[in-house]
Every structure is written in structure tokens, then in C-alpha cells.
Amino acid sequence: MSINITMPALSPTMEEGTLAKWLVKEGDSVKSGDIIAEIETDKATMEVEAVDEGKVARILVAEGTEGVKVNAVIAVLAEEGEDASSVKTPSADAAPKKADAPKAEEKKAEEKKTEPKKEAAKPGPAQTAAPAKSDNGGRLKASPLAKRIAANRGIDLKVLKGSGPHGRIIRRDVESAKPGAQAASAGSAAPASPDGLILPQILDDRVYAPDTYELKPLDGMRRTVARRLTQSFMQVPHFPLNVDITLDNLLTSRAAINNAAREGVKVSVNDLLIKAAALALIDEPDCNASFTDKGIAYHRHANISVAVAVEGGLITPVIFKAESKGLAEISEEMKDLASRARERKLKPQEYMGGTFSISNLGMFGIKSFASIINPPEGMILSVGAGEKRPVVDEEGNVVPRTVMSVTLTCDHRVIGGAEGAKWLAAFKRYVETPEAMLL
Image 1: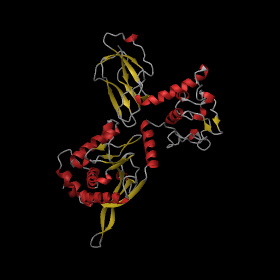
Image 2: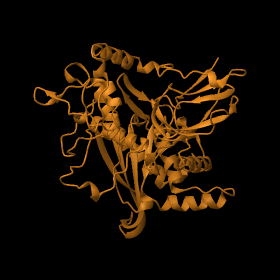
Image 3: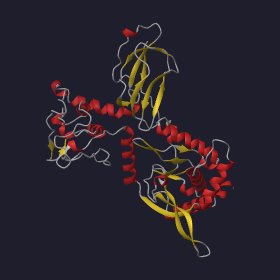
Image 4: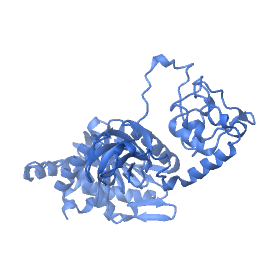
């Protein structure tokens, strides 16, 4: 009996991915544990192992295909002794995704409404279809599911012809359209996304001629970053707190640590800041928290997410239980995570589960900035460059000191101004007296 190979869920939140590359071809024999494909999510590229043995009878999803749903059948194995040529191609719904059950019911309901006219079930190509008529002089007639799919694929509903009752646009109309299909006039109003959070944006051809710019399609990471940060900025009430921190003692301690460290270990300023942030979270547990609809979640450990710039966006690998790790361990772990992040080789469990974030742009000469909170975390620290500044010492003398400006952005639903200020005071104490991290 043939065995279906389905699109795996590589993380708890994954709904779809890109089948980047097949490492086998039809006719190849595979055994359990063999690497058969590479899957791209919005954050990483991961290898897929075979869980059964047999011969690859059919490859149903070509490499490079985007938007492959979790649990969709992507290939079929023929078992030992089975004729691969006799294996039948499974139907599209052979392995339905449980989470998509409501969508399937909605699709069936829509299809029942449109059964009388078979010829109406085949909408014309998006680029030639007559625009859907609107009711009440403005609103397009389209099902919520059709609107959601159109928003995800960047399709302008105005160019589609609805095959539902009274010209209503339904799911199959959108799925048959080409991704990115737009109205003839790019300056026409873009439809709002179903969740009301992100409005699809297009350039007006009357202002920006198409031949004056190059349009690069969004990849999964860029699209996800845009969506999540927009939601965060609109839904989470942010407020910033700023403080200047003297770095001279920390820099001296870092030099001494690196001189005494074993070969191959080199602690960075960022490693010290990770440790200081973790200890400050333990000192001020009210700040190591996340807002949920059921209540405030207070985390027992300081899991520090560190922003790493990668091609096409950013990713935040996590140093788990950073409060209990030594500087050498944090340094080695951070180097490994950052390297694999840039190669998009991180596992989901390595960039999910943070309780606090650090974003450091000091190496780019940025003096001060404020970051957008990374939900469900309650705070994010933005670190600027350390620079020589005139400082008045305890004797009243103006002396040069290395000073760094940091901004703590807080979720006001979880952290008040006083709590955020207490955390910054604790963080500043650890940075300015780094020997306190050893106590």
C-alpha cells in the first residue's frame, strides 16, 4: 500500500511553507531517516527526513512551490514489492489539516450555492476578467474567506469576476487568479485586509511609472516581519524609557576576562549586556512578563531574544535561562546561533520562547533609537553606540567617559513606568559595576 509524504509542521505556529528543494527524485529508494527535501519557513530552511522506507513513486509538489499547507500531500512512496507505476495520485484533500476544518466547511457551503450553473464555476483569468460589481455603490461582494486569501496573496479583488450568487467572489475565484494580480489602475483603492490590521499598499502608476522602479516580491520572512510588527505597533501600547550608562568599567572588565579566558573564547560587549539584562529581570520579576487574555504571565527564567539582521529581515535567536549561564557559555552560544541564523538554519525552538529582547545597533554608529516590542514579550531594549562624552564626576570635574544610551520600550498593559525604571536601574548597576554579575 502506498504511503503519503505530507508537508510537516516545523513549528507549533507553522501553517504553510515553501518546498525549496527535493533531494530525491521519482524512482529513488529511501529509508527512514534519509533527508529527502528542504522546507523554507518565514524564518529558516530546514531538512525533512523520511519516516518510512520505500520507493518514491510520485512527487506531487515541485520544488520552489510557495504556500504549501501543513499536512498537504507532497509525494507518495511505494512500499517494497509494490509497482511504483501503479500508485495512484491522492486527491487534494487526502490529508486535510485539522485547523482548516472551518475553511473546508465554508468552501462546501459556497460550492452548494453555486452548483446550478456549471459554466459559472470556471472564472476567467484574473487579467481578463470583468471587475466584480459592488453593492451599495462601494463594497465588493466577496466572502470573508476569499478576502482573506486575496490579502495573503496580494490579489486585488476588483479585477476578479465572481462565480458565486449575484457575482459574489468566492474562494475558487481567488485561488484561480495569479498571485499579485492588480487592477488596471494601480492608483485605485486597495482593499483592507480581513483582520483590519494591514492595508495592502500599491504604488500609483500615475505618480510612479512602473519603469522607474524594480519590484521585488516579498519573501516569507519579510511578509511575516511586516505583519507582526504592524500588529504589535497597533495593538500594544508602547512607551519608552531612556538612560545613559557609563561603559568604562565594563570595557576594562571585558579586556581582563578575555585575557584570562581559554583559547577560542572572546566575550563581546553584547554578551555582557545579555547577562546584565537577564540578572536585572531576575531582580525585577514584575518586568519579566507577558500580557495574555487570561492574565499576566510571569516567567521564571530570563530567556533573552537577541535581534540578528539577516538577508530579507531579522530573526531573534534566544539564549534560554541566561541568568544561570556563564559569559563564556553565552558567548559561544550566541556566536553559533547568529551564524546559523544568517544561514537560515535555526530550528523553531531556537528562535521562539523569548521573554525579553535586545536590539543593538551600536556597531552601526547609531546613538539612540527605540524598537517595536516583539510580542508576547513585555519589553525590548535598544542599545546605541558607546562613545566618548564629557561627564561631570563626583568631584565636579569634567572628564571624558565612554557612555552608551539605551531605550527600554515597554508594554504598558504589563509594565508601568515605575517598574520599567526599576529594571533600568538594575541593568545600569550591573553594566557600570560588572563585578556584581559574579555575585
